[in-house]
Length: 193
Ligand SMILES: [Fe+2]
Image 1 (cartoon, rainbow, N blue to C red):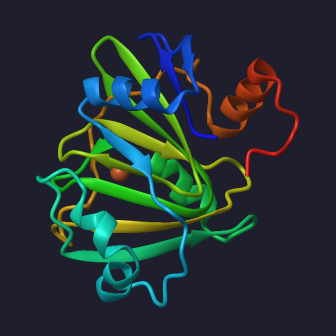
Image 2 (image 1 turned 120 degrees about the vertical axis):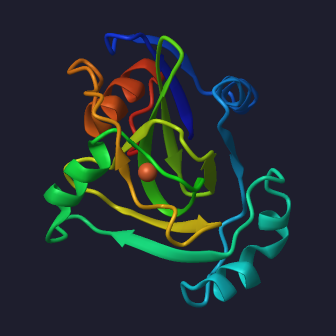
């Protein structure tokens, strides 16, 4: 279940959207494209393998995203180096290239700063998201991360993170708190993944 939560400038939880149509519309207002692809086996992790499995879907991405390279990121609970990587992801940044992610397994939380507040997008297996170049954003996958995602690039050099220097409000919930609150609100008892 993907979800989008709108937060105010202080990081206070406002609207919760779990309807695909509303999620897509709200993200479009922030310039972000989002959708679902079927989850398929990807034989390898380079651009050719990704294009072989998802060529049709990639071709249907909004026109300004041209995928010239790709890789695959798998992060499992207890993975060494995760705390440092997590801190990097959680530091608000931009890229000179679009950031396109497709989740094959697991889940991750994107924060996009837009207008007067923040949009928190929880992506799960089957969700893709495309943040245009220059989008101010951060990412978290919790204390025990567990995801497998494809990363698609138009410019292999362009995804280097440029920190914005903007500090996210302390009230903005990280992945684990976000999921816990979302499950409380929606009455789900099962694990998100
Ligand atoms: Fe990023």
